[in-house]
Image (cartoon, rainbow, N blue to C red; front, side, top):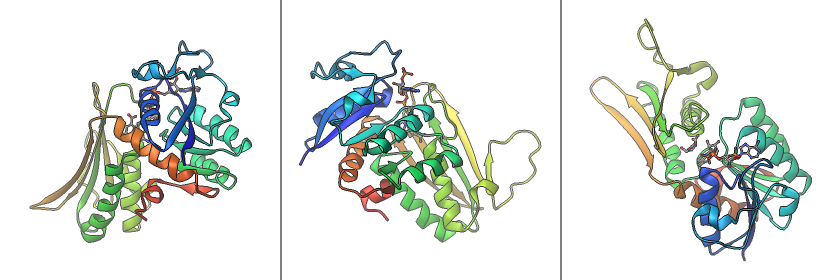
Length: 267
Ligand SMILES: NC(=O)C1=CN([C@@H]2O[C@H](COP(=O)(O)OP(=O)(O)OC[C@H]3O[C@@H](n4cnc5c(N)ncnc54)[C@H](OP(=O)(O)O)[C@@H]3O)[C@@H](O)[C@H]2O)C=CC1
Ligand SMILES: O=C(O)C1=N[C@H](C(=O)O)C[C@H](O)C1
């Protein structure tokens, strides 16, 4: 069975990779994509946008032109995603959300919407990162109570949110495993006379530079030794292929709130 998919934000860095991944996927039938009404890419062939040659589908401005899709994939911005959720809820469509940077309040809105529609919310759709979340859980359980935990992430100069959604989720996984409240123990950057490190804290450090696709490391450091768990993405296609897995999985799911751990059977 092929799943009919539409890509929202299809002229973006991820959007273009998602078009290619969907077009080439044996279980996915790409039916269209959307861009902002003011975009210079309105009416462009999606294949041309993705650099794979014309495929006979053009960029729409209205989700109403994409009603033949069963699953929508959204890697856009917070504002756009919240609007897209409202549309998908009204039209009974499933939604894979890759957009990052949501506040706790926005995440609860998304969870409420998922009572009436199937949603996968995943700050990182790569298989490797989701396996890393598992490794973090195991490591935190074993040595998290007595090691210093720091999370480092690096991304390209165009990224708008910090720390990355993936880094926040890494912190969340570790904090949950250790019974800590991330809102209370997170330290976002340090400057000046900071004093000695509080052992309960989880530190975050961010780099924004050039064209880095996405790098994440968790440090579990003791005196005399440390473990570093690192994931490096070298192509956005890894996120796009993970999003296709999520779309295929979600097409058969009931209304509800899911993540990539559900999609990959890692729970
Ligand atoms: N979950 C994951 O694995 C990954 C998540 N991401 C996340 O995905 C999101 C997009 O990343 P990326 O592709 O690099 O970003 P881009 O800025 O390249 O793409 C975003 C796209 O969304 C469109 N868009 C933004 N706001 C609106 C709006 N209000 N209405 C309509 N369209 C809108 C943009 O259109 P325009 O250009 O006209 O503004 C653009 O085409 C980010 O939140 C990023 O963190 C990224 C990579 C992997
Ligand atoms: O904006 C990006 O590029 C990425 N964003 C995601 C995040 O915020 O974690 C995932 C990936 O690392 C790339």
